[in-house]
Image (tube, rainbow, N blue to C red; front, side, top):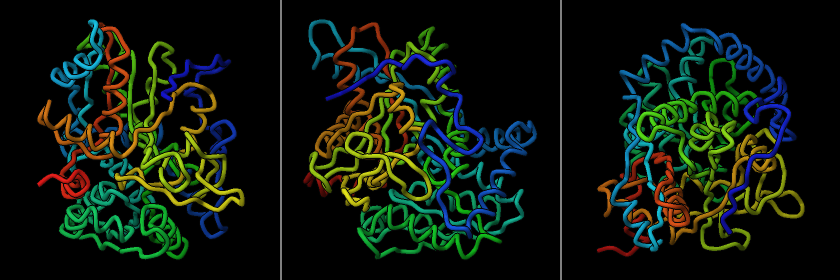
Length: 416
C-alpha cells in the first residue's frame, strides 16, 4: 500500500506548529527527568533569543556556504527517469530530480543541524557536546562541528552499528571524537540514544546534547527541523528556476525524520505538492522485522516526547530491523506523527530488498552511490514516477552518500 493523502482542510497553516509547549497537535511535549528540565529550558531560551536574530543566521549561513558547500544542487536524474519510464510503459513516467545532500560536507544532511547546535552550545557557554549516531553520519557531523569550534565530543554508537559502519567510526576518531560503543539491548540507535541521555543527565552544566533528528523533548524537534529546513527552502527556489513551478511530489526517507522534515517543511502549506515519507520495511510486516512506526506503531512516549512508537501491548519498545543503520529506530519525530494524522504527508515503507535494488539502480544509471537510508526514498520515487504522466516532476531527497554502506551492501547483495 502506498498512501499519498491530500492535505486536511484547516483553519491555520499546517506549518503553524509547535505550540509554545512544544506540541504538534497531540504529539511532542517534554517527558524528561527533573535533572534535564533546567537544561532544556536554557536551550529553549537560547533558541528563542536567536530565532529571529539576523546575526546568528548570518553566521550560520556563512558556514553553510563556505564550509558545508551549500546550496547543494538539484540534479535531473535523466537515466533514472528513463528507467522509470521503461517500467511504466505507455508514455508514462514522471521526471525524477535529486536534491543532492550527499554532496554536502561530511556526505549527508546532518551537518546542517550540528553546526547550528554547535553555535547554540557556544552561546550557552558550554565546552563539550555529546551525540548519538546510528549510520554514523550524525556522529561524523557532530565530530566535525566540534573540531571546527574546538569543543570536546563524545559520540554514542551501538556495537552493531559500529560493525556495519566502520568507515564512519574511523572518521569520527580522526576528527578527535571519542566513540563510546554501546553493548546494551539491540546494540543499535535506540540503545545509543539511551546512553547519551544518561550521560547528559549527569553533565548538563558543561555539556550540550546535539540530538541528531527531529525527536526528543521540546525544543529539539523544532530546532532540528528549523536547521534542516534549508534543504526545502533551497529546493523550492531551485524547482522554480529549473522547471518553472513547484514539483508534483517530494519524497524522503524517514527514520527519526530529520532529512524528511527538512525538505517537507517549506512545502507543507502547498496543497498541490504531495509529500511522501518512506520508512524502513525491513524483512516484512511482523513485529521486530521492520522499523516503520508510522505504518505499524501506536502513540507512545520514547526519548522524551509523544509520537508514534513501535511497542507491545504493555508499552514496551519493540525490537526493530533495517538493513539501514540510520533508519533502525522504533520511534519517529512528533511533527511527522502530526503530519500523518493531519493527512498532509503520506507514509509508506520500502523493504530491505527494494532498498538494496535501488542502491544498485541509482549507482548504475546515474553514477551516484546513495546511502542505504536514501535508497529507500529512491525506491518510492521510482515507483511513484511510474504512476504519473511524463510531464510531472518528482523530487527525492538524496540525504546521504553510500561510501559508509558499501561493505554492508556488498555482503547483503552477495556481490563478489
